[in-house]
Every structure is written in structure tokens, then in C-alpha cells.
Image: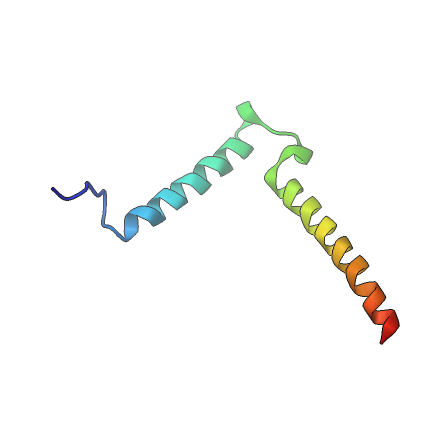
Length: 67
């Protein structure tokens, strides 16, 4: 017996990913579950990006002085 599919074997994973992203977007922007600006995923990603860039600069700075 074949496993059940909604659209097709290739489209079902994309539908699942799209549904997940949409659900998370609605969770973050819905007024009832309104998150503070600092608690959103975008704020976390900006913080992690800045942290990674700072570590990269600290790692590359000694290399620039030796060349």
C-alpha cells in the first residue's frame, strides 16, 4: 500500500515548509500573541550576526598586523 500524499511526493515537503513559515510569521505578528521587538526572531538573528562579525574581526585583526 502506497503512503498517503496530499499533492505529490515532491510538492508535499514544500507545502509543509511553507505552512511552517506562515504559521511562525502569524505567531510573531498576531496582536493576541504580540511579542516585544527584542523577542522576535529577527532581533535574535541580528544579534547573532553582530556577535559573529565581532568574533570574525577579533580573529582576523591579528592576521592583518602580521602581514
